[in-house]
Length: 366
Image (cartoon, rainbow, N blue to C red; front, side):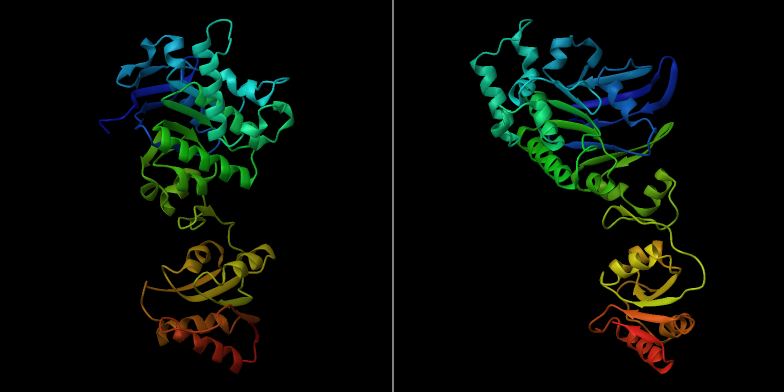
C-alpha cells in the first residue's frame, strides 16, 4: 500500500533483549481499521506497545506519514497518535468531561488550562461518541461501556491521525461491544483516521476490519482482507482448533462433536437444524445428519458438531444413492428429528428418509 499512513519495516519486538516476533511488516491507510488477532500470549499487545513507543524496538523501523517515528518529539507524536489500552491508568474523582478533556494535553501546555477552542473540541468528541449527556457525571459512576466511550472521546480530542487500541471490548457486554465498534467504524470513516487494534472476538473482527493480521507466537502467520483471512483452515491453524470447529460464515467457533454410536438422525437444511445440533451436543447425544449440500448453512455447523455427516456437492439435488447411504445411519438411530416444514427440488430426496423412518417405526420429532 504505497499511500499508507502507518507502516513498519522488518520490525522486531520483544522484552529486554529477548526478541519475540521478527520481520513484522504491517501498514494501514487513513480511514482503515487494521485488526490483530491470535491466541492469548501470541504477542499482539507487544506489537501494539512497540509501534506506539511504549516498548523499545529491538529492530526495524516504524514509519508515520513516511517519517521514522523515532524522530518525532513526544508532543509531536501526541498530536498524531492516540492510545487506548485496557490496563492504562483510568482517571478517578473527575467528571466524564474532565476525563475526556485530558486528551487535550498536547495543546494546553504545562498548566493544562482549557481554552474555548479546547472545550469545543471536547464537546464535539463527546457528541460524536453520543455521551455529551454524561459530561457532569462522575467517571467512576458510569458503566464500562460508557467509560470506553469517554476514553475514546479523549483520544479524539488529541485530533490524532492514528489511534491504537488494545482489546478495547474486553470488559464490555454484547450490546456495548457492538455500540463501541460501530462508533469506532463510523469515526474512522468520517474523520479519515487510521486505526490499529487487537480483538479476541473473531466475529467482530471479521465485521469491522479492513485488514487482518494473524499473530502466532513467534511470527506473523498471515495477513489480508477479512475474506482472505477468515477461512476455516487458516483460523484452525492460528488457534490450533479441532478440524471443522470454525465457521467462516458467522465468524464463530463450535464445541467438539460428541463421539460414539449415533442415537439421533437429524434431517434439516437452510439453518433450520442448527438449534437442534447444539441442543444434542449440549446434552451429550451423538447424532448423524444429512443429506445436506456442502454450502448449506447447517452443513457448516454439522462439520463440527455431527458424529456422522452426509453431504452432496453444492447446488446439486439429493440423489437416491445419497439417501441410501444416509438411510443406513438413520436405521441405527433411536429416533429422528426433522426440522423442515417442506421439501424443495434440491432436497426432495430427503423425503425418502422420512418414509424409511416411518416404515421402521422410529419416533419422528417434527
